[in-house]
Length: 311
Image: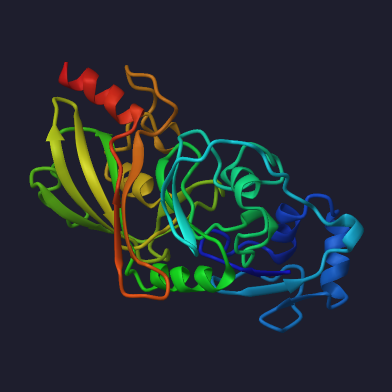
């Protein structure tokens, strides 16, 4: 099995990461496999405590009788685009992109396996068949899926080179705010950039935060509509860090509506956590020059909150 590490999993210990993706193996068994040389990082044997880096390539074999499978499930897919090499789906809010050691059912990967079987890339392992990038469980919207490894590498290259355009819609708390942090007219102007580095929160590893030693993170913001205490915005990701939009907006005291993880609390309009949608994708069709532009309508969470705010 080969797995390429992306920025979502960097800085994790090698043994801890393998324990996440192979929950049927004990930590001691995993450490034994690593020490025996059965696990290699970039063709080199490392210690169990090795800290993973982005673009590391893990090579290992799980004993056949202990191999963990993800089961196909007949879950409807909202397919927005499809060709012989890839597809783009509209993931609903509430659905995990791929299984975890705790939740192995009702994810997008379960649904993809039912419809496409083995016709999905496996570069990132069995748990992430076809998955090129992710959306948080409660963020809805467009996701690219690769049907084979060659396509996976082609589209991953576009993502790394920032030639894929990803735009989001969000409703955030706050209407106007003269911010510090070098953005003097934040929300007093209709378009601006947030350029603040993001890294993992050392005290709460499930969260990210703005930190000086984090990775460069750039978000472009456009105001769509203003309300008394909230703002409807469009966000374009120039980089694609974990929780980037949620962290940037929370750090500037304008958290995404109902994003309880990053300090928004529950607003008067109840929704399934953050009111955030990936609504637009633009990319180059695999193995050609055609540009594919895709856009979907606002989801029910956004419409529900907008109806209240406009009413």
